[in-house]
Image 1: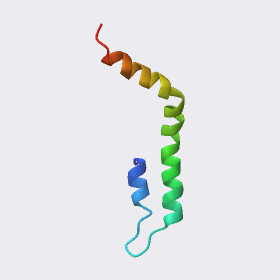
Image 2: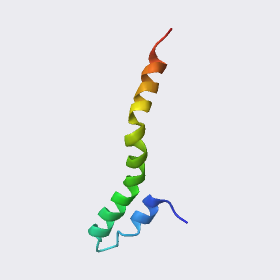
Image 3: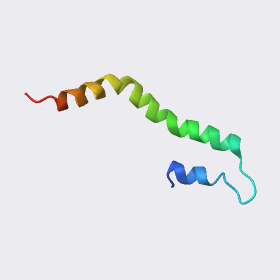
Length: 55
C-alpha cells in the first residue's frame, strides 16, 4: 500500500509521462478533500473566528 503522491509518481517515466493519467489521478486525489471541506467550510470559519475573540 502506498499514499497517493507516491502512486502519482509511478506515472512519470524516464522518457515519457502519461499526463492524462496524472491529471485524472490528481483529480481523484483532490475530490475527497473537496467533498469534506465544502460542507464544513462555514463551521471551520466560525470556529476560527470564535477562537480569536477574547471574552
